[in-house]
Image (cartoon, rainbow, N blue to C red; front, side, top):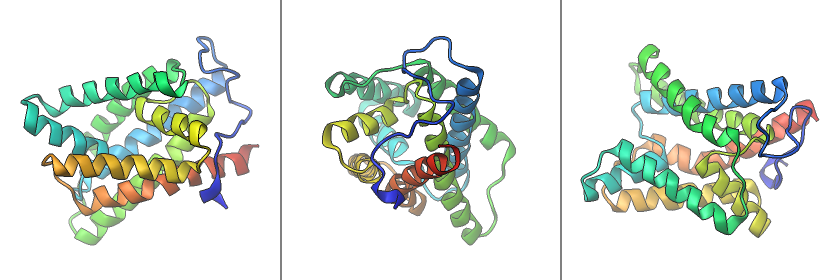
Length: 215
């Protein structure tokens, strides 16, 4: 069952090591496809107006208490997440850099070209689709093995240390983050809760589908 998946699968486009500055074309292609879907999902969640992702709620909550913008806080939160990699034996790669660039670009493109649905039901549907897209995108780009983003690196690093299912580790991280953000004053909506509780299973499903289809 996909919820029990514990490892990032190896497929034909997977890089042999994360620190690979000259990956195969197929590896780089799927890295970009995965990150593009990830960013599209993040953008659709914002557009749905049902609530931001847990990490955005955390950034908002912190910004309300330190007088820095959400963007600046997000940057420092990412640096903090990266600093924790030291204790998790996690290794960065070019995927770590492209994670920041491509996801940010796709969020901006989504906001620029996609309109918010008029009905609340359709907004909820968009939020659900957004979570599934982030999960599928994660499954594709993580299997490229070119280094995860700061937050996904926490997920994979903790999973290796604890040997718990990826779905459980991701859910724990997202619920913890959104709880802290909400306590600090961040705004939580139903889309936030969908993301917090659904992203773990969605990532596990994405990894399962990639393994099932391409292994």
